[in-house]
Amino acid sequence: MAAQFGRRLRRGATTTAVAAVAVAALSASQGPGAVLASGGGGGDQRTAGSAPSDDSAATGNSPYYTDLPPLVTPNKPGTSTNLPITGSAESGIPASVLAAYKKAQQSIASSDAACRLPWQLLAAIGKVESGQARGGRVDANGTTFSPILGPVLNGQGFAMIKDTDNGAYDGDSTHDRAVGPMQFIPSTWATWGQDGNDDGRKDPNNIYDAALAAGHYLCAGSRDLALAADLDRAVLSYNHSNEYLRTVRSWFDYYKRGTHEVPDGTGVVPPPLDGGSDPSPGPGTSPSPTPPAKPDPDQDPTKPSKPGGGSTDPKPPTPPATQPPKPSQTLAGLENAGTGALTATAGDAFAERIKVRAKNSLGGPLAKVSVTFTIAGDTDTRFDGGKSAVTLTTGSDGTVTAPVLQAGGTTGEFTVRAIATGRSLPAVAYTATVTARQADAIARTDDKALTAAPGAEFADAVEVKATYKGAIASGVAVTATMITDGDTPAKNDKGPYFKDADGNTVRTLTELKTGADGTLRLPKIYADDTAGTYKLRLTTEGGATVVIELTVEAPAA
Image 1 (cartoon, one colour):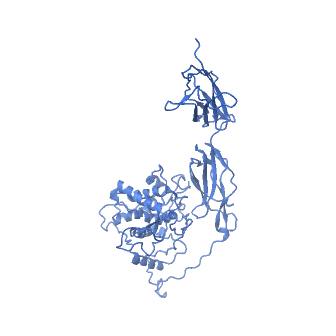
Image 2 (cartoon, rainbow, N blue to C red):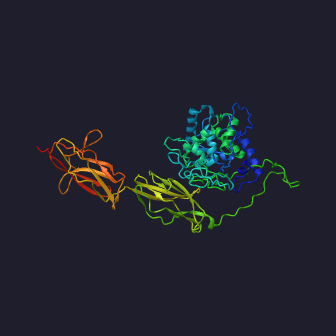
Image 3 (cartoon, rainbow, N blue to C red):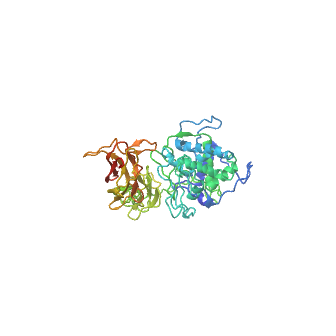
C-alpha cells in the first residue's frame, strides 16, 4: 500500500532526478532534520504500538499534498526562537488555524503531559492534509466555509472502506470519504472526535475540533512524541506511507524553525490532487509551485537507466506538454435550475426542492459534477435523513436535485448553498423561510360558565382547541389578553388576571402553544375585588380569535 500511495503525485511533476536535487537542496539550505527512526532504536526508551494496518489509518490513506517547504527557512538555525510577524504566505499559518493547533497542544499538555505533543506536528499534518484548511478559509468559530472531502474510498486507486456513518459526515452512504481539515474518515472520527471550541458539537470540519482530535489520535498508545520512533509511528498511523512520513517530517522541522501568523483566507494552497475532490484555493490565495516527483529508491538518478544510455547529467528531459481540457468538458460554474420559493411551516417538509445545473465553458450541461449542498444559518431544518450537508452528482442533463428539506421548530430565514465540491467557483445560494404554525379557527372545548367570587380564583380552567383547514393545529402560538368591552377593545387594567412565575399580576400571556392534539389549557385565572363581566381574548398565529366571557360576582345568599 505504501508504494501505491507513494505514486499519488499531481500531473506535471518532473522526474525523479529533479526530486533528488530538490531534496538535497532542501537539506542543505534549511536542514529539516527529517531523519526517520528505524525499527525501535534511536534512543526510544518506551514501547509504542506498531503502525496500524492500512485500513485503520485515521485518513483511510487518502491522497495528500506532497509539496515540500520553501528552500528558505523562516529563521536561520541558532537565531531567536521568537516568531516573526511578517513573511511569505507559504511559511505562514492562518490565524484561526494556528490558534487551534496551539490550543490543542495546551489541552493535551493538561490531560496527557507525557505525550509531549508539539503544535508544529499538528501544523505539519494540517499542511499536508488540507493546505491548512484551504489556506484558512474558516469562519469565526473555526468551521470551514464548505466541507473538505477526500475522494470516494471505493478501492479504485484508494483504500476500500464501506460507509460507516450513513453519509452523516461525508454525504456518501455507500463508501466513506476523509472529512475536514485534518481528513478523518468517519469511523475514526466516531471514536476520536473532540469538541475543541466548546460549542457542544464534535465537527470534523471545525479546525479546533479536528486539531484536538488529531492530537489525541497521535498520542494514543502511551506515545511520547519527543521520541523520534514514537513520532514516526504516530505519523504512520495517520497515513501509512513512508513518503507521507517524509513529507510531514519536512514540514514539522520547517515549522519548528519558526513561522508567523497570516490572516485567515490568505494562506497558500497547493494545486488540486489527482483522483479526488481535493480542496482548491479560495479567493485571494495563490497555489504554490507544483512539487517535483519523489525519487525512486531503487534507481540512482546520477546514472543512465540503460548501459550506454548517454550522459550521467541528472537533468531530466522536458516533460511532454499536456493538452488543455476541451471547453465542453470544463466546468464553468453552477446555476439555479429553476428552483421556486422555499417556504414551509415549522415541522413540515418543503414542497419545493433545490435544483442546480452544472454548465461547461460553452454554456452547455456538464454531467458527473460533484455538488455539495450545505444548510447554513440559525435553523434546525435538515435534509431528509437528518443531514445538514449532502454531496450528489449531476446527471446527463447537467442537473442535480437536493433531497427534501424538512423544517424544524425554529422559524425564520436560513441559507442553502450549492458548491462544486473541491472547486473554487462561486456558490449558488438559496434563501429559505420557515414560518410559524398557523390556525384558522380556535374555540373552547366546553361551554361551562366561568365565574368566580371577588378576590377568589376561577374554579374551572379555560381550554381551547385550534384547527387549520379542519385539521388539528399543533404547536400553534397563542396570545391570551384580558380586554375591555366596546367596539375597539384594549388591554384591561382591572378585573380577572393571571400570575407570572413570581406571583405578580399579569393580564397578557405570550409564548403559549397548542399541544400535539391542538388543545391549550390556560393557567389559573384570578378575580380582583371588582364585580362585573369581563372578556378574555385568545389569538392564534394566523389570526384566528375567540373571546371568552368571565364573570366576577358574589355567591348567592
